Length: 337
Image (tube, rainbow, N blue to C red):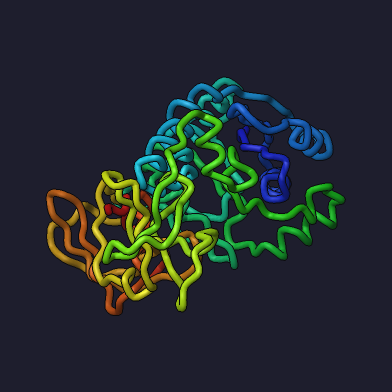
């Protein structure tokens, strides 16, 4: 079978290509031009593996559907995850179009994830290794999941690197990317300012209104942030609120961030049908491995997640993902303020 693989030039997609070859597939590497980055590492990987290589343009779609909405949301005090938006709206649809042009039956990525059928449709589930990216793919619908292969299913990162070293891949020991691909230095505030979307400086204040210092613009802060505040205090301070009307960043102790309920909208149901009655499951509020038990209360407006113990309030705009005991993704949704 012919498979179009998203080839980034990193170790994961290189080993994914190798695994597909070992399964007997004909692999066509596709480097997506999103308006930044260098295709040469991916091209060299394709040459080393002896697979086809194509550059497919998706730069305009990425600007329109990912970068621009991210900038607007971040400026409004939300903390969206652009990867969560990119996968279902840009990256996977672009790979699917490339696959169709190349005459490939399936597309594949180097994500650590898996699919299996439930209720007659493909559903996302955790990979089973030491690394899992099902959280980042939770908003991908069944029409795309039905066309995707995840050849790294079940593998651990050390196993991936060992395979890459054994084949002499130059990416074998390359560090994992920790930042947003279009903001590689992680300075979101500067990126917004370079786009002409910075906000003016203002005051840090506590909840009583006492001025604690000066901030560099609301666009440089997110709910729950502790680092980079530049304010001295007897105890650790966190960003508790962003007040657009007063241009103030409200700081407080960690206790002020604790909550036991989280509201979610823009829900995409996965391995379960849309529910009207409450149910229990495990929930991830961040991409890190920890899952928390929660009671889920559906309503016409979305979902309310009630947790067994207080937790630090997640930043609005992030993703909440529900899982069952088998690691299937039950739903994904956007966290509300």
